[in-house]
Length: 332
Image (cartoon, rainbow, N blue to C red; front, side, top):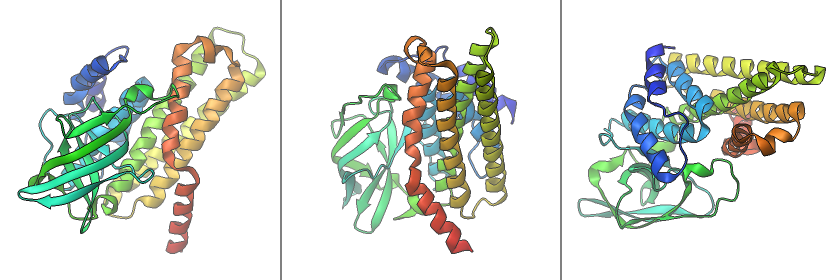
């Protein structure tokens, strides 16, 4: 990759990445200008972009999750020919979980949004978000401001330690005014645009970074010990799995850049599945190699395992595999 891109991001990262809303929000603001140097996908430097996401995942999965959403928002706006609000931190909130969702009603000068969205990562931390809403002519995407009385963060219970620091909550929207110029793309554009599944594959690069962090931890844990044969076997298998995942991400990135406007779904879903399965295997093998003690006495190890366990559940499991299988049959 172009070292300058990652170095700018890495140099802006606080060490360690803080927890707590105010401190994490300040850290995100600090890294924002460096994130602006990350190249957009499908422009010949997708691998560079994913290497940045992998590096963020290696550093801290919470920061990676929030930074990935911001970078995805910037890429979506660019794909639509729209501009981001300068210096704003963005998220992309388009969860279709349950019956929640927003409704968009045309009004003089633009739109009014109302309803409830679930799983809004960075709620209370971010300045703006791209949100989906049902309108009379289809599902539309809007660039909305999150500061104001029309947007309420409902701090939903988060009982698992994993990814808890991302401040992922529900939001309630009541008559939120959106200027006409902040409707992004045409009706039903968001889910069908060429870059949609490329963004999904970019999430897998964050997971790969988290896996790399576990493999690094296991190697350092065993380095100053007299490892048993089974521990060496698990270390080798984890390394091999990560090597294969990194190669798959690089191959997918190269294909995306060579075919920027093709259907990226098959390759994106394949690499997401591989990343999720590799994560599961590495989490299992590290635990089998070292037993329960690090889970209860090593905050770094336990935190990374917890974060990965929650984060990769975003993959969609059998639902994504079913979609991939149907897609493969349609192409044969």
